[in-house]
Structures are given as C-alpha cells and as structure tokens.
Amino acid sequence: DHRDLHSFPTRRSSDLSSLKGPMMRQIQSQPSLAMRVKEAILDEITSGRLGPKSRVIQDQIAKNLGVSRQPVQQALHILRSQGVVRDAPGRGLEVVPLDLTYVQNVYDLRAVIEGLASRQAALSRPEQAVERGKELIDKGKDAVRRSAFREMVACDMEFHNWIYALSDNPLISATMETHWTTIQRVMGEVLHSDDKPRNIWDQHEKIVEAIAKGDADKAEEVTKEHILLSAGYMIEHLGLTQQGTDTDAEAS
Image (cartoon, rainbow, N blue to C red):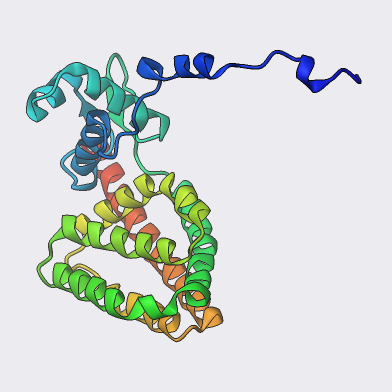
C-alpha cells in the first residue's frame, strides 16, 4: 500500500484530551483494602490460628476486621486463586493443607532464582550489602532470640526481598512474589511446631559476606545451599506434623 501516510486519519489533540478525566485513574501507592484483608487472613493461617481444613467464614472475618463483605470477598478470591483456600464440603471455604510435593517444587525453584539474585547482587552492588545487611541480620537474630514468630517470618521476607532489589533484576522479585504466600505458610507452620526456633541468620550472614566481597560464585553457592537446606528441614517437619494430624483424625 503506497498511500501517503498523511492520508490516514489522525487523532487531534482535542481528541486525546477526551482520554483524560474519569478514565485515567491515579495509581494507588498504598495497598488496597482487599489486599490488606488478604494479608490479615494469611496472617491468621501462617500463625496457626486457622489451620489446615479450618473453615473460613466470610461474615466473621468482616466483623473481626471491621470492614464490609466486599473487600473480604475480593481477598478470598485472591487466596483461592493462589490455592490457599478452596470450597469446603457443603458450603463455604476452608484452608487448603500444604502439599509437600508442591512445597519441594517451590523451594527447588527458589534455589535457582535466589542463587541468581545473589550472584547479580554481588556483581551489581556489593558495596551496598555491608551496612544494610548487618542491620537486617541483627534484626532477624533478635526476633529468633525472642521467639517472635510473626517477626521472624517478616524479617526473613525482608532479607530476601532486599537481595532481589540488590540484583537490579525486577523479574526476580516479580517471579518470586507469586510463591511467597506458600513460603509464608510453610515457615508459619514449621515455626509453630518447633520446640525451639531454628536460627537461619548465620546462613544469611554468609550470603551477605559473599555479596559484599563481590564473589558472585560464592554468593550463588551459599544461597542455593541455604534454600535447599531449608527445604529439607521444612518438608521433614511438615511431614511429621501432617502424619500426627492424620493419626489424631483416625483415633477420633
């Protein structure tokens, strides 16, 4: 087609102005109410207050959180799409028990992606690892010392997300975000079944040291080792917990 480009109709500036106004919504910097409700429900699950196969009652959640039913519905829709809740027998929703094979797959993926994150962090911004890394490690060790379970999970998430940021690869954070709901659940269930919280911060310290030295190979190696050791520990404990639950159910 050899027609002159100028012969095609063009949108005038006055037409472009019509795209503004109600159609153009400002991006919200704060989490939506539905996302905050979702995090509150997830916190109930990771803390053990809502265990596997526990009923999730929409009206009760709305009442407890002081919100309307709509954000609760939206939050439960998100959690359902993430495999955290499912239809309960009869009516309503229940918490989905963790699947050990799925958990292993998540941690296998973590080992590769987070190994890459640490490698890239060592290559990109090793100088930024020292001061902030020490702050995060001290904060995590303090949470373990006080057996502050909720803080322990939050500190671990903060540490790993910090390394994602250091890597300068936004796809790492975006990819891992979809799996952190499962990881939070795993950490929550294991922490509440342990007699004494396990201190993983010595392993984190080795990761920071390798990144700070700019040793990309070592940073990737110790990160993968940390994730796979955590996977073995978590899955073993989850398996024992699930066996105990099944035995109790049969006995009753």
